[in-house]
Length: 452
Image (cartoon, rainbow, N blue to C red; front, side, top):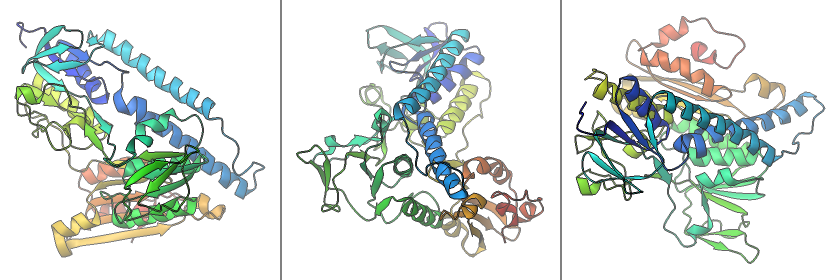
């Protein structure tokens, strides 16, 4: 730690990763400054994980009300929802998170500068008000933003962030994209009262997930009423005299839409940060190129979270930030993020989660040594209510001992079930050890130990 500089570390960005870095560095006794011109919490808290999960929970309740009606409860299958009231509850929850962050930042003695920063050199940042501050280490944690395609009329559509500005369910909605954000938006809107169509450039949903589960998810979405258009490239948008939107080059004769959302990927927030000028290498999507230790091409400049271009997940950003601070200030020179076997969940309806290798990845790596076990079933509530939704659970195993290298779950409770099984996979569990574990009956989770 250098006394010749204002701080030991300056963190640019107050999202989940930036906050985690600041808190962990302060716990090691470092002098910390954090620059954040907007709301604390970044994408996750304000226009990502947290408000998305709040809306997902509301959509899940809507689905269960429909099941309750089918089971004999005296409720309307689709009761009216007051969006403004739901949004009020959602924003109150977020405000409590903001307040919690502020209290902890004050308690930990972290200097919070409500300004944007720009690098002048490898150790100096100039704030947007002209004030210069320096540190031994600089951490870029500025996140990423949704991309908008370079097509005619693209400005007429919204991006995923704009979903959170809605105060009611649009009647007709188009979602352009086939990744997890597109899937989540489509499911939420359909469940909360919209009629949704998805325009997917590829032949399937969720390229990074197991193909078989992605196919079952697509079928579940169809059963819920979502119309899917695969291998469809949107070439432009046009606005009708009544203000509604029409898609050009994809189902052009179809309905006009009240809203359209692009969910085609994200780009790192690195513009006008002075990174290239000080020698920091950037990637094709604006991300800071870092090594296995989260360090850029400039040794004193590091990057974490979405802007580092690795796995764009909040828990990954937090874990990487803590490991980096442990290495820089906690006397743990070997500390670094392990990006293997990271569990992740898509909050579709029902949720889809995975950890480890997909079947395709396992066969490419291990060939004939791969064995796959599947269970395709209707969960009990769906069966009781004669609902069409199906679950698909899958284990991918390798070698004579059948080490479990991939767990893939699509179905009710998958988001909660996966965490514990991810620990088992990380510890190197085998199929035999799964089988020797007594099942909890009747549950969906028991399929993972009973699957044959």
